[in-house]
Image 1 (cartoon, rainbow, N blue to C red):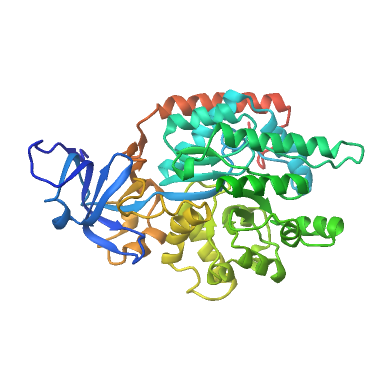
Image 2: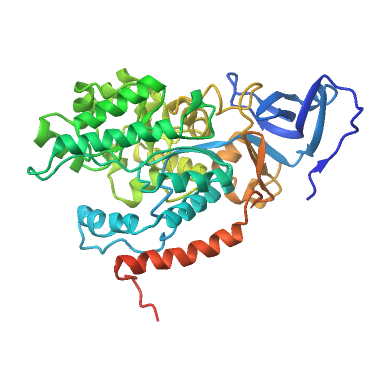
Amino acid sequence: MNLSQTLDAEAPGTIEADLLISGATVITMDGERRVIEDGAIAVAGDRIAAVGKRRDLEPLVRAARVIDGRRFVATPGFVDAHIHITGDPLTRGFQRGAKEDSWGDKLQKWVIPIFKAQTAPDERLAAQCAALAMIQGGTTCFVEAGTILQLDAVAEGLAETGIRGRIGQWVEGRAYDPSADQAALSREGIAILESEVERYPDAGGEARLAAWPLLVGHSTNSDDIWRAAKAIADDKDLRVSAHMSPRASDPEWFLAKYNRRPLEHLADIGAMGHRVMLTHLANIDRSEFDILVSSGAGAVHCPHAALQGGFGVSKLGLFPEMLDAGINLALGSDGISADILASGRLMASLFRDARADQFIFPATSVLEMATLKGAAAMGLSHLIGSLEAGKKADIVLHDTHLAEWGGPLFDVVEQLAFSAPSRGVHSVWIDGVQVLDVGRAILFDEDALLAAAREAGRAVIARTGLPNRTPWPLI
């Protein structure tokens, strides 16, 4: 479908725009949560110039390109607040361990060796594959999980895809061996944090790609590194992001070491606050919940990881309570499914069943978590998360001429949140630049990328020497 046409350069207008999307149903996610039927969005440079009814905007806008949006629903770009963009994309189908392996053995003997067997070109490819998958699912902004080994190569590769994101180099600075030099490990970790944020500055959120002081989390870093990461975030208005308490093993370790649960300890050392985002949090108690609320920290739920990993989240998770308490609760894919709306649907279904309450996590909450709450947790809600004049032009067009959308758009929010397929993502703009058209990347050759990724993935596994374990015989 040819979407664009060029207007007469002499046509009257008061708003000069590079792009006008005309006739779409626009889910603005603005303060009033307006849904505009037969709406229009004008884009100038990297910003949204105007949003409103088509009949009001068309006479006012002179645009270099006009898109007929009548078959589309327009939304802000989605936010994936926790994703591993390296390690997994090249080797996703490779089984990590066997049933008899403990969780710790799977991490130490399988997951981490696969990460660390990857070269700089491998990580560059992996990051680009992750970016492609996110963009094709409507995600325009992400927070990386803090497990990048070759940061410069990854940043270079991501820049070619056009995606918006916050990334960080792998930092593990705790000495588990009593004979190790803890002070030296802490200095090394802090130096990495300081160096990366200087090399890739956030520029008040304006940078499309920037480094944040990301920590692996759990029990992997010393108190000095946690405090330093928080100080860097406070000084530069960034965010610290880390895994915490997916399983009971995290609180058990902190209780044995400090006689305090994880969030109690982080609060005690001054490492909690609104510039902190913690992922998983399936095994926190009410005391930690209160700390999360009072500190203003953001929380990220990765439902696919929780269910596949058997975290016990349906019994233990306090995520409905987090939403009710006003916590910025965001969604993360953890790299398992790049379709962030699928994560929201899974979360809603999980807790509706667990609490026997069909009204938990309605469609409106799912879309808020995928957009505004993700942006707010990142401290970027002044720039992204809604379609409003002055904000970044991160826009997704969803094609409604698909069977999953059904007939008329009676409740477009409900249909998008719970019915629309990810294959309906037709076009995507980030910073006003189109990065996807008819579901295909347009800034790079996605076929060449995927071919290279398949070859690289085989080489990575060959270097680890790990056996390919499959449940059924592969002949």
